[in-house]
Figure 1 (cartoon, rainbow, N blue to C red):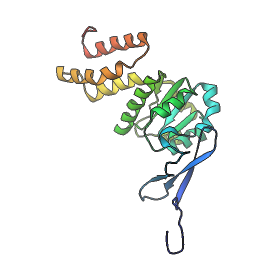
Figure 2 (tube, rainbow, N blue to C red):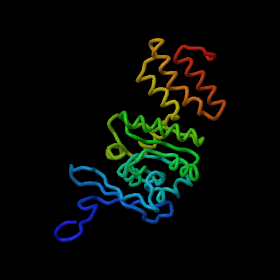
Figure 3 (cartoon, helix red, strand yellow):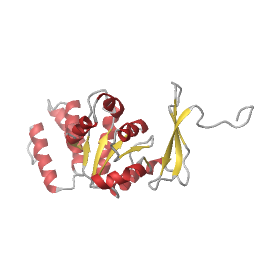
Length: 232
């Protein structure tokens, strides 16, 4: 409160209405228009709004999700806006939080296939791998869309066509393959110690692969890449 009365929590911010899957507004997010912090403020948690179980834009995405039987998950409101404006409608975003089991359960009710599109930095890779684990538990096929280094959906679509984005989507790699390749890039298997550390990272995720054929194929490929026997 100031001398003249109450002031708005979201003053001087761009407002994003957050809706439930039926389209009812249940909260707001406000983004600053300058360099001040915090960058985003969300409505407080309430009986209607739990950010760990709400996906921004899901209500707008549902018709396209049903048509394409897939969903693209992005991190931010502007990522969602860029794709939606370009005509890619089967997209939803997390509301300033990491993906949760509530989110993945909600997604499974509507889509049979998931694409993730997170930042290419270290935090984005961690988010991709964490989401992979959650979707594996739901037995949902998950693929990772990779954009050129330094690009997010907004900057990519500013310079390229929707068809170019669709090409990136068509080249999306299975999430577990993305995880394996990322791990090998971070820890080259050039010594016994590094191979042991890689296996320690791989094993708990590998065990979550539900399909026996897929698991067998990945086992053979991992053994080939690391130069170890399947028995080991």
